[in-house]
Image (cartoon, rainbow, N blue to C red):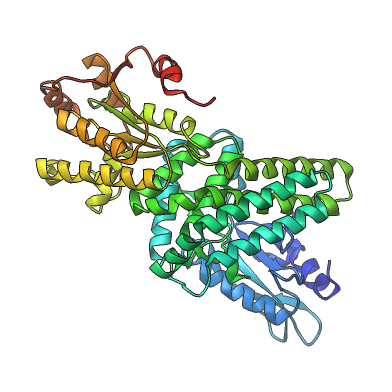
Length: 515
């Protein structure tokens, strides 16, 4: 530990300095490359390490105090219930240390409310408890945060990503001796080629206001579930180049982290739900590069750690982790395969279940974009996805507006070279013809799926729904059962015998990637 911080560290590690914890028991300590976190009772105290890097400088007490103030300010945007204030370890004239006592200010720290570690989303994911409902609410939270984040046009241009690529290349070369040098160069060349292809778009988005003061470190370990709501915390405060960036680059870290954990389906939900709010289909063109850059950063950090860990077993784990991120960076840069699949059927037929099961297997990571009519309808009317709409949301004119938005967004996503799954009833023949025309205009393959199940199964599924974007109830279903559907030329898929069987039936015809 730095000698100038040893006294403060010893003090914060002492249970006697925690009257909130009754002055008894142990103080738990968590260490990172840039901070020390002390946990006791219902409080957490986060102290910056006295370190100085090109990208993070906490080398003086003044710089650490500024960083603490910045962290408090930035994280109050998304987690005001966690961040309580900046406090100081002080030394009185008699040499006694205290928190915010009289005398010399020795070391600043951030005081926070403590939360159970098992509520962190990475812990929930490891335990298999991270589900679609939490993931939907997470996407809602990220979209809301980005919408309110301050626009910054000074940074976030193409040069930022050139620097990211260069740093990753140098780090892999210096610390990734276990990686093939030719493959490292191949990754660099692929990233640079992709960057040059999308650089004009990156610059245009910067001018258009898509570069905002984002989170900068948006992965599952920096999100906690509190009272059922995902809360983003620990946003980066020490380097604006990491945070004043395109919103899609911020989102890409979360999408990459989920996919890297083997949760590609949840990564797909995050992306699709985010797009339901933002309609930022243009950003999809940047996703392969941004996912690759995010994976490369995590990979070179692991490579660096492997070179500094003394324990051979721990170093070996870091090398494996670095190699896994490296492979993900290579695979993420692969070109997508644009195509359009429409999933139709009456309420309760399983459209969303099928669409979400198909999407991760239809395109490059994290799969095809799912455009769900129920979600887009709520966003067009300016209400939360699970808030029930009144009759005004289901007029003929409202329905036409929703279907037009579906087709417009599908065309934009295809233009951004992404596969699309449109999830909507498509009860009318003209609606089915119109979505087919979108694929024809884009020159991409099309497949239409019409899902069917017995009326009793449809009703049972509708009645089981909870916290869902669909407002369909038994009355709506009864009306649909009386529709004249006209001739249906789409592939009929029976879902009454279970979704697994239905999906197995589609693997060959749709050429699905392995799940």
